[in-house]
Length: 140
Image 1 (tube, helix red, strand yellow):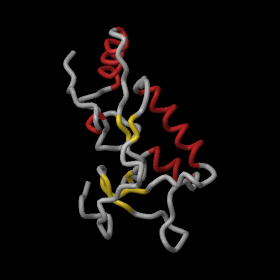
Image 2 (cartoon, rainbow, N blue to C red):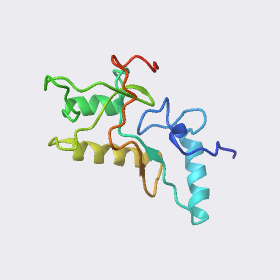
Image 3 (cartoon, one colour):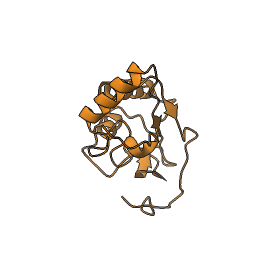
Image 4 (cartoon, rainbow, N blue to C red):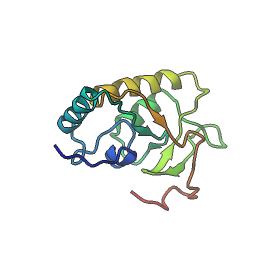
């Protein structure tokens, strides 16, 4: 088995959190990779960026996040704040909202079933933003 050696955000499907690239990191390939890694007493610590892509209405993490009202609001206090990071236009978890911790924990647990990680590298947790005014500058 030969897998790409990058375990930064490249393991994700289109840079979407809690996903695997279906070509480079299919579930079967990921299982084989992790079995080999763990058999060698090594740990798997993937990176994750808390910017949740918004232009895929079927993206389960977005759907569940919207249903649980977990995203930072913009200045009007009603709509989620639109930012821009690696996947493109994104919303950010509001860690002070009532449901955010349980939503995030559930997403991590679901991801654990795809890729048996041993820890996480939480990156861009300071709410990084590529600062595109309308969320279209990076595209995707």
